[in-house]
Length: 637
Image 1 (cartoon, one colour):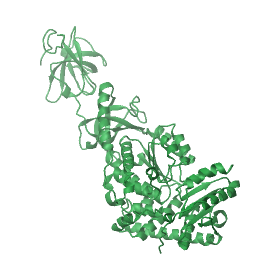
Image 2: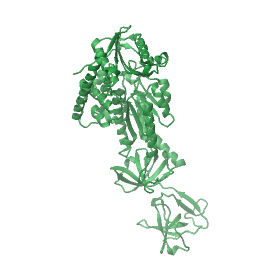
Image 3: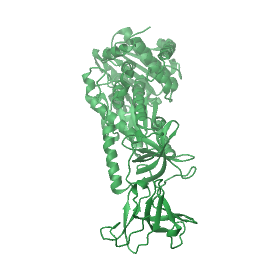
Image 4: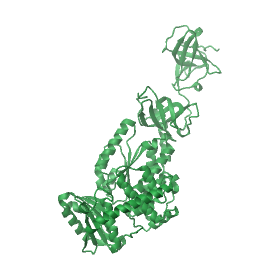
């Protein structure tokens, strides 16, 4: 056993020729220790044969009583000299009695692990560096979700049951975690023995490393388009920016709240994006329940973000932040969100850190909407129109987010186009793409009808598994899909026939000054209420039959006490513009609404219904006839 060198000896001296005493960081291990050096120590135990001392949280040893010239108590601090490191890892110390010395701090030389490479089969201590993206207090440990360059992993720290561990560490902190890897619910979890908040240069270095990895990993994938459509290519850069933002949001651990119109096109838009985001979450988060917490899909009955919906969404988000330590979400609006009617809801969210992204094909109010949103994708903003449906755009968006989806969505754009009556010439390409996957055009129509039927009964529920089975996306039983679609589409057809049997005798007809056929129906008095089909669907079915029957330019109005639903073929209407004109022309009418140029809805106060409808018809009678806008109505048995 070696003895301590004299203060004047060269061993263990610093630049001033004074003896060096090393002050180890708490996380230092045996690998950071060298024999025949001085260390700052703390007494952790007193026994008959000496004292035990700690020189870090993980490194301890004995000072034998033969080396002691004074009495020590637990917690006393002293300088010790490491005389020996035995083969079994035991350390022997003597007391270092130094009149003068220089203290040198020693940091642990970490081997930082990647979160995506952790395995519970290893018993070694691991170290992670990353950002805290969520803190959840359970009845037992505190669960910190830590994001490094490779993945997000849960790290459990225990103070005592239900008590917040490391209360000074908050979401957004850059930390170093030390612990062992365990398995919980068949997933990786780090049992943390220590979590340190990094600061200054260490924090800056880790932050820079995370930022570089985040920028690289969040980049959307370049994909080959499903069909050749030059008009669609104008939208591709916008969609790529949205895909990059959504991938980044997932990697940052921020939840995504997806709102979509509760119709066929809205579901053809939202379901593929939901599937892509969930798979990306599964790829980048070690917690198997992460997708359930980070993504919510919520249908909206109205074609805009209603104040009732935004208040509910905001309240739940604030509760999730308080109860589960989540960040406030990103709001993703699909087949919805482009109009002036959405502004009050967006202004409500503007008081909080909730970014908004819109992918829509309704006629937009960009000057009003764009200052309030992060991204806004809409074909009208590229001199295109609603023939490019949101479902078509979102299938490409989903493939950019998670290209591994590949051929699972090839039939969805055709369903979206048929349900939203797209008149694009490129519909034939989408239908051919679906036929190559085994879907006839009849099958696609029936899927759209089944979606519309089930959406009516689901109301505010997303009906996740049921909708997936109908659309045959992430569905493991093709036979069940076909039988379910056959049943639901036949029920939809039956209920539509029942409704039209009651309605058609009461449809009023006139020929306008521009030679367009106008059909009107009082839905309040002549249609079954509170059942399928809803007023919009009823009006649409009447309209399609009249277009097929006449083969000429047709406008159809279905109205109730305080609303009207509009459809037009072969007449160049501009329903959003008409709404604006009615707002100023019909004083006290309380007019609002919008939609596409030739499909939309208008609300008004009950007592002004006749004035609003008369003014609306006058505008329709002055509209230009345009044969190119006429639908090709496809019938099926």
